[in-house]
Amino acid sequence: MKGSDMRRSIYLILIVLTCVWGSVAPAGSGGGGGGGGTTDPEITGMMGVVPALENSCAAIWLPIPEGQAVTGLRWFNNDGTLAFPGIYLESGDPEQPVALAETVLMAENVLGQSGDWSEVQFSEPVSCASEGLYVLFRFPEGIEVSDFGTGGGPAIGYVTGEGGAPGWLCADGESWTRIDGTYGFAVIPQYVDAEPGMLQLNGGAQQPEAADVPSYQTALLLPAPNPFNPQTEITFTLAADEMVEMDVYDVRGRRVAELASGRFAAGLHTCTWNGRDVAGRGVASGVYFVRFRAGSIQMHHRLALVR
Image (cartoon, rainbow, N blue to C red; front, side, top):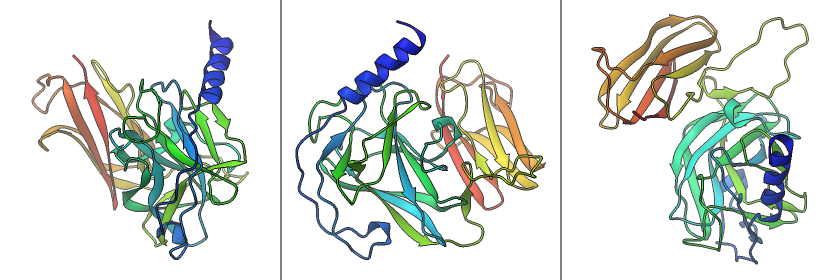
């Protein structure tokens, strides 16, 4: 089975085998979403992707009130023994999620509680230039969802009726299938007042018709390929001319290589790391981190070198 037939097959599996269990009692009062301590919605069941491929994701649309920024999330988690490899954010159209490759990584290897409300805080608040943000949960590859709670596999709670957030599922990080509007994901944003200098996402904001050149946000994009051998490309974008420092570190925090240092013009820039240190020696297989700093913006991504 190839091409469109394979894609249709994947989504048939994704829709039919999305895992659903019976009612779960709410955990109590929640402080998320700027709701002033409103009661958490009652969880109806759990949703996960079966089978989970490399870029299988859930995307949840979160309207952002004017003048507010998101500092973290609360969500109802299924299996506390498994981590989501990444949680990503991007601005966008409320009717169609952006692709995973167009988002900004906000947290890695995120663990939650088993069968309970869980929380993740971002390293910095995030505002947006459109009506709201998409949060993408990337599912761990190759792990089946089979039951509720510990050992049951990665999944996110959902509710029926009011109290849930609109959501989509996809197998490849690009082609989305919307969840029936009867159901909503149990994901609640946590707000703070937006302030100048905060990271602002505008990937989905409509640009003025007269604009001849694209505008960019300051961000570090996902390296590709990753894992890699012998080299990978690391791309960053700048909203304005800025001093940039970008280096590679090992898991012990030791600086391995320098990728960028100096003032760069606004726009898109790509650097290549060939798996060698500052002395030109090839480094060992393993996990490394690229750290990016431009003005007040600091971000990092995980790299995996496989010799």
